[in-house]
Image 1 (cartoon, rainbow, N blue to C red):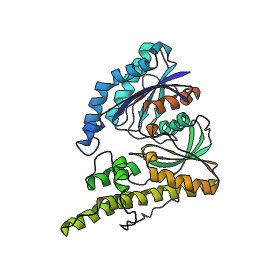
Image 2: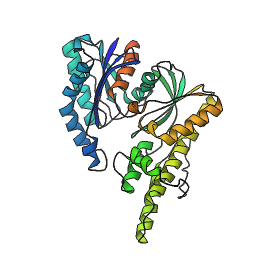
Image 3: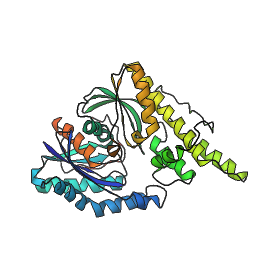
Image 4: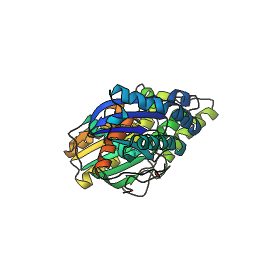
Length: 335
């Protein structure tokens, strides 16, 4: 079964063809990230406009790369939530028109479910149940993946997402957007013990909080500036990265130990962070759990992950009609 996946929830306009939820046929990404970098982060209006400009050609290229036409596709899957609502609506409305015109089923896909499904592309042998940390610019969740379409949330951020914290700290340190890769690159030359950053306390054993950690970095920078000094960017990047990765890994591994998880996985943009991957891999092995990490190309937003999850949603009977609407927020366990 061939699924066309369309993704437009943030600043990537993406489309892909995936066979049976695991085998990539084509994958095309058109991004406005360089333009967004001029402003130090995503400007929703710019993202929406670029999606409207790029989406038709992006979908056409995905079909062309697969040597297919829309007639060869079994269903059209699209991210409908959560995300920047203007951006989401571009993808949803395009997918609705395409599915209607071609007489194909329309499959709504939750963005975070898509990130998790990216693991099936990297590791076709992976099957639920497993424990997953899905962390990105807008979300940080620890989730029990019970089967391909059912989830149980164990923990989540109570304020900023991990990726959002990386972006804001990068901007504070004068590093370019997106912040995750910039902070990681700067951290390679830094001392992770140079700055004593706080460990935020939060209710909920598996919950996380990053607002205070982000503010601590901002305060360090401002205090240094008031003294006519400057923080060491490499040291601060390394210290921040170490703290946030330790927090994420500790919560995930605690949940793994408590639930006796046999499989532990990472998903989302923050899953590309090398230090986090190392901490989770080492910790899970000590617990006797098998670790699955996504290929770096599948960590960020892409159409392949939406097509992959779309296959399982379709098999589960999750078919939308033309009243489908985009949503800015929606829990991963909504159905």
